[in-house]
Amino acid sequence: MEKKQFQAESKRLLEMMINSIYSQKEIFLRELISNASDAIDKIYYKALTDDSLSFNKDSYYIKITPDKESRTLKITDTGIGMTKDELETNLGTIAKSGSLAFKADNELKDGHDIIGQFGVGFYSAFMAADSVTVISKALNSEQGFKWESHNADGYTIEPFEKAEVGTEILLKIKENTEDENYDEFLDEYRLKAIIKKYSDFIRYPIKMDAMVSTPKEGSEELEETSEEQTINSMVPIWRKNKNELTDEDYSSFYAEKHYGFDKPLKHIHISVDGTVRYNAILFIPEQMPYDYYSKEFEKGLELYSSGVLIMEKCGDLLPDYFSFVKGMVDSEDLSLNISREILQQDKQLKFIAKNIKNKIKRELESLLKEDREKYEKFFSAFGRQLKYGVYSDFGAHKEDLQNLLMFHSSKEKKLVTLDEYISRMPEDQKYIYYASGESYERIEKLPQTEAVAEEGYEILYFTDEVDEFAIKMLMNYKEKEFRSVSSSDLGIEPKEKDSNKEEDAANTELFDAMKEILKGKVKDVRVSKRLKSYPVCFSTEGEVSIEMEKILSAMPNSQNVQAEKILEINTDHEVFQSLKSALGKDQEKLSLYTNLLYNQALLIEGLPVGDPVEFTNDICKIMV
Ligand code: ADP
Ligand code: MG
Image (tube, rainbow, N blue to C red; front, side):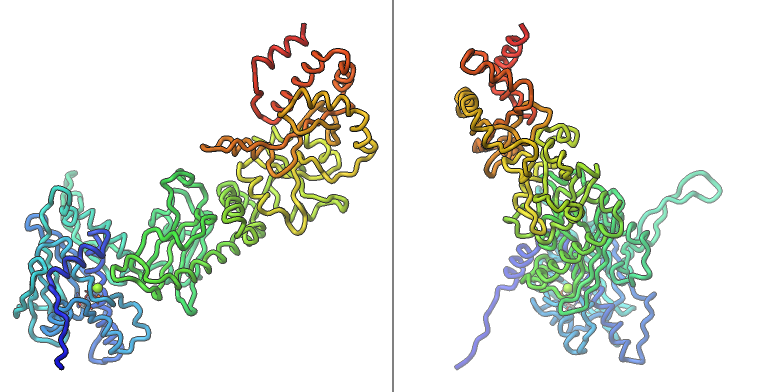
């Protein structure tokens, strides 16, 4: 039986491929430059084993020449070139990669710098050009050839005189259409930006003629002259030896790559040469980007494959709680898809991401240990993100992050770590205490802090919305439970005051009457163990604290979640006598006092009073 090959309508296939695999037209320049770089690399590799060949870096370059008048863009290289056969097979056959074959033929172990592998990048030229002309002369050939195709509808090859070895690709740039602009590919500045973006670390110079203004000789006037410039930085900083790099070098890289307008607080340089090889340069910024908590902010690192930009913001490389980290990763071991824009399978990426996460964590830990001042600066900018991290994903990352947390301390009046808190705890102290509020000043004045403070215990002040939620997720630190100073059980042994239970019993009648007056508003009325000088405060039972109630009720579709409030009365305070004397004699007065105290407790917490008019009327009543 005769075996037949599949036929393909190659023009249609090309069109489909060209227009579906690349998300952006500008990619064509990246592809053609990568091919040119590969062509030069091939001479470089050949020279390693062929003594008759010498490789002098200075004579190898890539040149980009736009010409607005003729609407052409020329990409010239001094690489290995192509013979007639090679033009036929490499450019005439879709999915044939001469570069991949070259790597195999020459058993290049270190050939990972060669970028090409899929044999489709070249055709991306048709995204920007109507016709493509390739003039090439191969190394050790006498004759050059011209390959030409209009709209990728077949091609012609004919002999063509070319003096130097290498390749010249001439693109006839498309005319603008109603919704597509092609002029940009003839614009010097735009081209420079595209080259910088994708091909900055191509190892050979990418040259372009650019107009420069120079003073005319002997006059003040400026003269416009054309001058050849090298656009790319060529040597990626991450390939350099760490010991040779200064802080200054890293800072300039940070600025040049537009990672931020600030200076980096810290850089992390990673070189891994294991199963997955990669280099990374990461930065912890000094300041929070202005859009950090907006929808516009997108986390991620730049992802390079052998020095060519694949993705501008690869989000999968960073966990959300380290989303402030900027920088890049370069790996030659990524499995790319044919557009080289996305990854085929993310096994290597996952591996790199995990490595990076651990490295950032360790670096932050050592910063905390070695440069406290810097760490505090970092924490003021991004600490909240770490706390979100503790809370998110049902606490899955809390083990990773808890050592990095800091809170303002009632004793130290500055940020302290949980370890520091624990290390200072007196033996009889059962819990890690915290108090929540709008500001340190307001928390300091919270009546609920009195009892804990009087015991001499340290209190952590929570002012970020996320704090209590994060702590609820942590539950405890080194076996010490967290406890709010508003909690109904503070775990403090009563000292002078004998059992509160007894007192409660003695006052049952009064408290029952008050509870009746505040029906539905409080769960209970009790004698306070924590108040020393204030007459009244709330404590809470259950999962939801008053701060959490505030935050939850401010959310767009809040479910009216309420804290279970307990009105605590300071029985040592004079108002208590007033309450007592009203009981059974003057119900109206008792009701007035009870409502006033309740509203006071609300105000202390920063909660709105239910009916402000009634409240002010009540105050007037007791004044007259
Ligand atoms: P890839 O680069 O993935 O191999 P391309 O479609 O970009 O695929 O290129 C196909 C082949 O054409 C390359 O593998 C290479 O052999 C050849 N080629 C393309 N451009 C050049 C060039 N400038 N110089 C020499 N060979 C080239
Ligand atoms: Mg290519």
